[in-house]
Amino acid sequence: MKKMRHTLGGLALAVSLLFTACQKEDTQAPQDIEFASAEFQLPDLADLETPEVTMGTETAAFTCTPREASKEKMELLKRALKNLNLDENQRAAVKGFVQQHHACIAEHMTKIKDLHTSLLARANAVREDYVKAYKAGRITKAQLEEKLTQLRASLREEMAKHDAKQTHMRVLRKCRQELLQKIESILNPTQLQKWNNWKSQLG
Image (cartoon, rainbow, N blue to C red; front, side, top):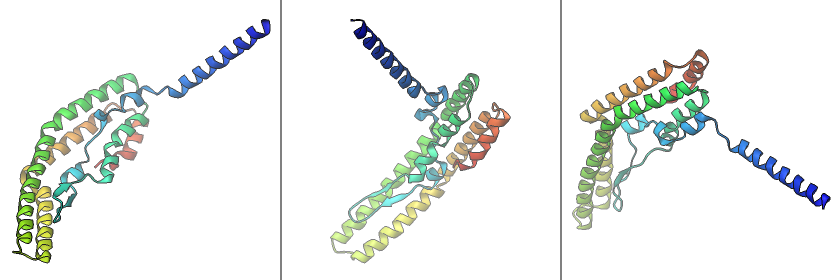
């Protein structure tokens, strides 16, 4: 009986140690938890300014596809903040700065996305006319391809250089700069050095 109690006691101790070890492995630093949300993602301004126009063929409409590098850029701020070892007051301040930033860009992001949608719809309406003309025998396959190529180039240029969009892009860059400056203002010299090492990666 005594031997069984020793065995059970040893087993309980082992389970307790294992549970404690698992807890330590699962424990995350406060900044890892706080900065993991999508709230701390930043839009890729370069991709937003010159979106990748794809498709636009006889069988597929024009569309905009985010570049693979864009997804990586969106995570840069999150990773940087995690690496700064911010204290509680700094984390609270940064969260406020980010919320202000989202309020600053929200309307302009919506306007740009609406503009992209409108330009795509207009280009796809023209594409439909070209495809119908080809199927009706009014233009050749080669002529269809040439028209679609020209239409794609025109769409890309308009998406990049549209006057109203450029106005919105200027505001987005201003909002971005203000966010970065606010964060920099609360960093100590060591944190600021880390910050400056990667800041140039932001688009």
